[in-house]
Length: 230
Length: 248
Image (cartoon, rainbow over all chains, first blue to last red; front, side, top):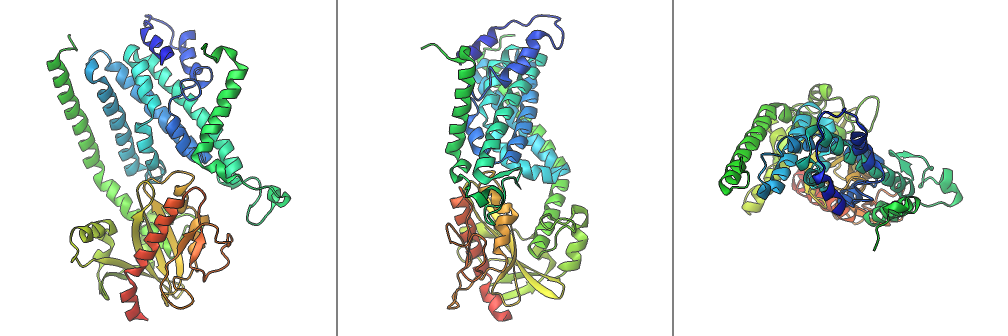
C-alpha cells in the first residue's frame, strides 16, 4: 500500500486541462505499470472466480468500470464531509447502494442482461480494488481526476481479467466465447484428432492464480523498475 | 466544519442511512410491478422451454418475451394443477405457487401438506408433465423445470437455472450441453425402482448414448453444483410420483 498512500498527498492543481499529461497518466498507468491486479495485487479473489470463460470476464469488466467510475466521483464529491472514523462504512454503503440500484433498474428494463449480471453483484461489492481506490484516491482528489482514476483502474483490472480468461477458456475448455475453436473434444475433430486433450485443471481457480503469477513474472522481467528492493 | 466530532459522525451516519434507505426503497417500490411482470414472463418461458417450445430461430433460446403469454396460453393454458399427495386440483393459481415458499412451510411445520404445482403442456399431440423444482447449488439456490412423458418413465426436457453459481463452472447447468443430456434419460432402473437422474463424474458415457443408466455426464469443476442438481431432480420428481401413479 506504500505507493498508493503517496497519491493521497498529491495536491490538486487548479485550472489544468481535462486531459493533461498527469490526468492521462491516471487513466493509462493502471493498464500496465500500476495494474491493480499484477502490481497492487488487489481484486485477486474475483479474478480467480470468474475467469474460467471470456464472456463473464468481459461482463464483469464493464460492470466494474461503471461502478468504479461512478463510485469514485460520488466519494470524491463527499470527501470533505465524510467523517474519517466511519469512512470505510460510508464507502461500503455508496458502492452497495450504487450496485443495487443498477441491478434493480436492469431487472425492470433489461431483464435478460440483469440475469447475466446477477452473479456478479456480490463480487462487485466485495471487490477490494473499489474500496482501495476510494480510500487511496477519491478521498483526496477532485471528482474529475477521481473519475479518470476509477475508469483507469477498472480498465486495468478488466484487461487482466480478459487476458487470463482467454488462456483459461482456450486451454481448459478449447473454446472462446463458447465457440469450439480447437475442434470438438467428444467427436475428436480438429486438434483433438491429433490426440490433444483439454487441460481440465485450467478451469479450476488455482490455475487462475498461476496464470496471474506468470503474467506478473513476464511483466517484471520486461520492466525491471517494477521489482522492489529487498 | 469539524468533521471529527462524535456528534457530527452520528448525525452523518443517521442522515446517510435515511438517504440511502429511502433511495433504495423508492427504487424498489417504483420498479416492483415491472420486475414482477418480468419474472412472470420468465417463468412462462422456462415452462415452455422445458416442454421444447423455444425460439423459432434458435432452439437454445427462450420464446421471445412478448410472445410468452400467448404461447403459454396456447400450449399450457388452463392445464395447471395443484397436486397434494395423490390428488390434484385444476386451478390457474398453480402458476403463482412458489416452490421456495412451499419448502419453507414444510420446514417450519412437519405436518404441512405441500402444494405442488404441475403444468401439463400439449405439443404435436404429445403430453408433457412439467414439474417445477428447487434445490441448493454450491453458493446459492438452483431451480429448474423438468418435463416427463405420458408414461412417467423418462425425462422429455429440462431447464435449469441458478442464483449465484460460479460463472464458467457451476453456472454451466444452464447451458445446452448439460441440460440436453437429460432428454430421454430414464428415471427408473432396470428393476423398476425409482432412481431419478444422477449427475455423475466419469460415467464413461460422455456422448450420453445410454439413456437407461439414470446418469448424465458431470461438469468439470462443478461437483457440488452437480450433486445439487442430482438431489433436486431426484427429490423434485419423487414428490409427484404418488399422483403420477394414479394417472398411469
